[in-house]
Image (cartoon, helix red, strand yellow):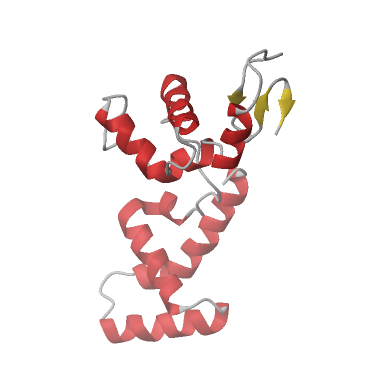
Length: 160
């Protein structure tokens, strides 16, 4: 979560909800009764309450902070030389699937089987139709062709 103050406030609220359940010597029947009462008062599900309790027992107060949404930046990116080789392979035979490209790159020793992911490659490789457009282009390029992180493909100095 981006706003740490808000995350701490939410964790504090969750801690307040859990505090009656954290008392020493509480029997299971009483704990069940407290859980039902908390769920009725707050409108959260029993499953959510159980998750909060489990996270608190595993990680303490910081486990009650909400997790950030969205995709976390990955340190593992596809190296430019591997991406370039994959694009060249797709240009040779535009009908090759991403899985086939990964297999060829693994055979050539350019990537390891453990690090290859069809989903990661599919996001950066241009579709076959784009590759056909690149291949049919003249060799006099105003700027070098490339696939950029935003998905724009540059061919002959123009976007496709």
